[in-house]
Image (cartoon, rainbow, N blue to C red; front, side, top):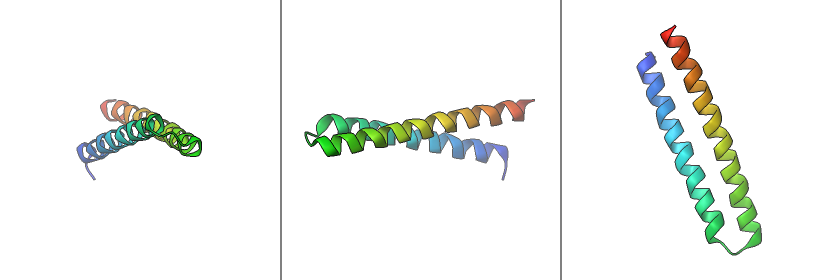
Length: 67
């Protein structure tokens, strides 16, 4: 796999995680059910963590590739 393809995959994954985080945040804000609200908030936190890790790893790979 070429580096450009790998970077494209990371960009796609980052965008997907960002959209998922936003979806769950909105879902938690739009529900009145306390259990659902808690669940959606937890999902949003997980997506936020995934997003942060993907961005970190992407930056590491970019740095390594340009060194």
